[in-house]
Amino acid sequence: MSAKSDDTMMLTTPFHSRVKEACGLNCWGNWMGYTTPNAYEDVELEYFAVRSTTGVFDLTPMNKYRVSGPDAEAYLNRLVTRDVSKIRVGRVGYTVWCDDAGQVMDDGTIFHLAENDYRICAYARAIDWFNWAALGFDVSIEDETAEVAALAVQGPTSCATLLAMGLEGLDQLKPFGLTEFEFEGETLMVSRTGFTGDLGYELWIAPHKAEALWDRLFEAGRPFIIRPFGTDALEMARIEAGFLQAGVDFMPAEEAVRNGRSRSPFELGLGWLVDLDKPVFNGRRALLREQAEGSRYRFAILDVDGNKPAQHSFILKGGKQVGTVTSAAWCPTAKTNVAFAQIEMPHGAVGEELVAEIYYQRELHWTRVLAPCKVIESPVFNPGRRRATPPAGF
Image (cartoon, rainbow, N blue to C red; front, side, top):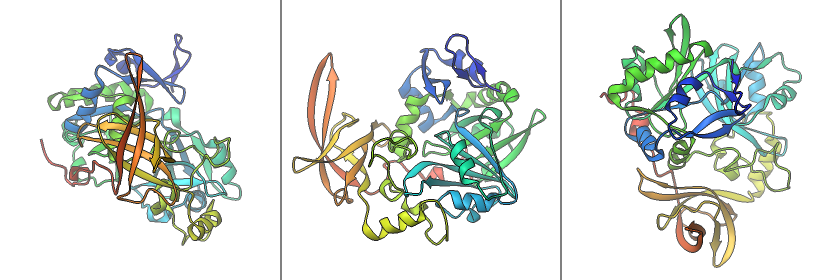
């Protein structure tokens, strides 16, 4: 179980004793009520651990919901936009779920643990919505966020590190696969998943074994230059890989107050997750109508001139505002200035040239830059090692 900190009155994860010791910068943030490090020692070194060696991120605050019972598959197929029956036991599937208006509530991953037994991992707290959607289904839904400790182990030497820790055969696990190992009398579940766009794994363990797992992992990873990384480095990696973040790149529909502030899967570039061949799911009627009539917005990845990140910028076409930037970063590995933007239709097609109106401050002085940018087709970072099975040895 997680515990409260007397100093902050916030929750701490089961790894907190190790995380606190490693956090030399004493730079902390709030993730769903948990005290989490923005950075440990140096954001760039942490980022390059993910891209060059092995980086470790405390994933425990991620919301986790256990869905089980005779109607578990039918319930999930009613809840989410993709066909859950295609996610086999021992596999993980990425998906979104919508309200009745076809607006995205959140995105997340579905872990098919066993027959009629699933875990949903999500950014937003969703237990009320999941329970409301369960009306008429023989299904049990449990919030197990505090019952499962988790680490993301990411980077080119992540597999080598875990093999050195004794997880024999892990190199045969395919992307989005699940497997289990014995760890000090408990079950250690390992999934080949992550939020960095690199080769990587996520480790799931009972909380009372968290510190032992951290110690074993870092001892095994020492020859592979293992390093913990915080949310600032993760932000750089996920933008480089083209991953959206709820609450940043879209407003979860349940949290949106003003009309027009939420988005559909089509407007977020996630139409490939919508299976309209399914007869019934939340938002299907609205999404069919949108498919016929067209969307209001288009999600675009922009290659921006210069090295000033276009965070919170307006996107212009012919001097007129046609969109806004939701995420932006200079991506060190790709050597590219990347931005995610919501663009008003019909603008934002691949290849279209736009302008980002960037404001940045240096020594209390604000500077305005009109940076040319171009809509690109795909993320700037998508290495082959992310999919290679077995991964390259080290």
